[in-house]
Image 1 (cartoon, rainbow, N blue to C red):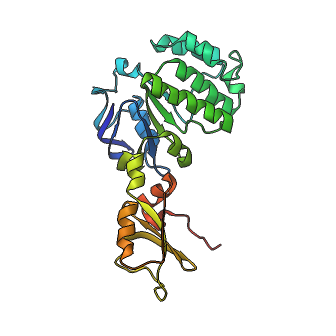
Image 2 (cartoon, rainbow, N blue to C red):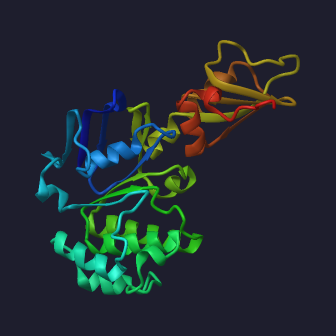
Image 3 (cartoon, one colour):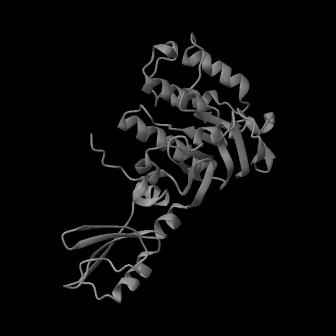
Length: 298
């Protein structure tokens, strides 16, 4: 289990992390989402021991990460901007990884070579961005990580390879109990793979729940009120309301059953509950329509 409590990290007075607290259950896939500059990459670097938090605790299974080689040996990471030596090939980097990570499996490295169509002797800097990302997964998954940190992990991969990579990651979660913390702006994809979600903004975790709880705590309803009732009653606690013709669309912070019962007192002609996507939940948890796309007149 990953535990971060009241983590603070400042750069020249700016708090990239400002009391962040979250818990990643063991053997889960945890999606960390938030706007640009929210502190996601900083948090991942603290978890990898690249940065030392100014205050607070960052621990894996109760052990601090900073300057703790035994903990770091169980953690692997693929950052958004993957580092490799300029003249190195995938084979050269494999030798480096094998010397650093005690659980590195040559058997798995050879097996994964079938999944990633890369010449292991070709310099990595000569590969495309997508193939460099494949090389990163090839090496990282060969380390047999217990904890895997991913920052925009499938950026640059084609659809087939994205599916291949997620299949490998989820197989490790199911078969080896790997714990995965993934930061991504691709919320639609996270919806397919994550079982827990945390929303980070301005260095703080606004909320964290299982994906099922998150989706059950907010609902979108399409409502047609009786004739003569053209506006949404002000006492209805809608986070957002819009109208197209006679159909009102309401976003409410409650489950579908409670929202439907609340609207029943107005004798609506139609009430239809529609599941919210993770992207919609993200927008409305961060401030509703104020965070949505704005119309700019040029």
